[in-house]
Image 1: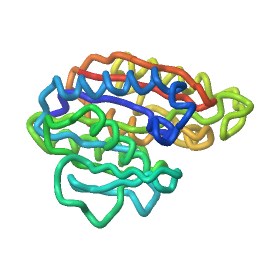
Image 2: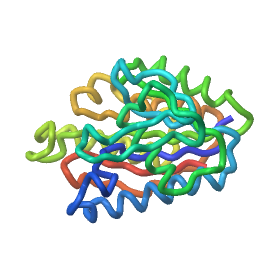
Image 3: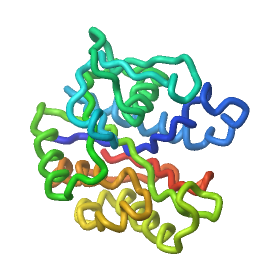
Image 4: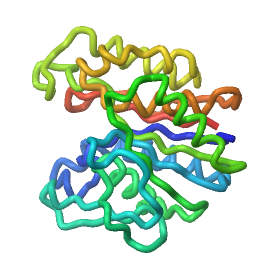
Length: 235
């Protein structure tokens, strides 16, 4: 059963060593992520699943001990997903950022596994995956990594799209209200066109939280680089 969840963005810039001199620009987002992970620890789960977007090479399960590297982003830094023997298969970037958050906050509350989800995954598949994860232990927690739209401003990676702000606002309302129906109803095609990499993971969360009766809190909702970054916790 799902007892807690945290939703965090997954830009590598969240890692100060990558952001360099601009690291302070993500201070508030980083602090909100730390607070969200603390909610997971306080729930005392039996198992934590870190869920995030991945391309076909990174989709599927990643065992405890799997290693992620930030060398593709110009920094000689590796992270490990919980404690365990290193696995041959590297973590996709979103799960590497999640592993970094857990390391940074000293996670030792429960065993950890990772799950890479393709951004194109149908909502029904996402919901079914969430239900399966929630049944994986008596007390399950999720750390869901993923960004909102990437076209909030003219200088954003996807340039300006007037539909982006309303889409992110709808997600923010759903996360704050722990509204599983609203998350499940997110338009897959629109999310893809707006570059919202978190859509599939949010719908995994919606499936996992069905009937759990959790309450939500929105901790962060901004678009510092024209990309919607949302942090929330459910408990």
